[in-house]
Image 1 (cartoon, rainbow, N blue to C red):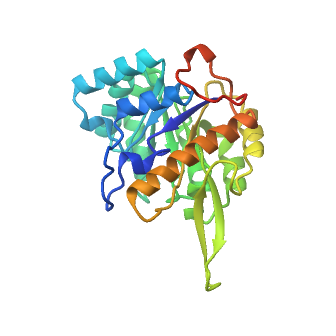
Image 2 (cartoon, one colour):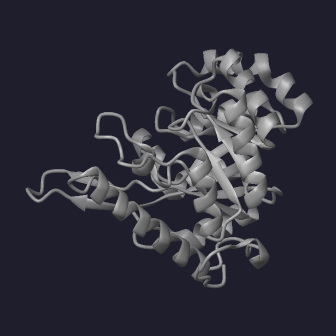
Length: 285
């Protein structure tokens, strides 16, 4: 697996609705540069920095910037509206992305399946994979049934290690059940803490390796899936730290700590050192 960053690695730096905007919001092009500075060659741009809102000229500049930094791009959105998915299929073609990550936003999986079927021939003709993320709205069993119904090499699971807590399912069960359909992996670590009044629990994000996620076990299961070209994307649930700028400092530190840990445990393949720039400390990824 190849390791990459995401717009959800540095969510606060991009901007979170309902909170003050960052003093210097990260743009897609700036994220490309940061990805290379981190010694990585992969960036997933998801729905919190919507690519369909960019002009064709801006998308071409992004493509040129990614090419200059030797950073592979993956694109993402949310929803199964056919018009939106076809728009992102076009963006994927422009930016050279091998997949479009999305998630089902309606409880009605049958309706979502019908929408996906309308665009599936276009994805298959283009050789682009539609990566559907488990996002807590549906159970693992429901998602497995969706993948079995669609039965296409161009549809699979963008497996997020934490999201399915929203469907009352623990990561170990989710990872094992969805790994046969794995086409993209979101590595997100977490901690579960009891409230100080002892009535209830909170599920909180942590840097990779600092929480309860069995990352070596995840590596073994994902590696055994046998699918070539599966990429791992680091995501972070960084809690608000009192101000947006303080939170940005925390998420940047967590990103660096996460990458250092993933390199120590050899989670993914080594980036070609000639592609790295700057004084990036490399720890044997």
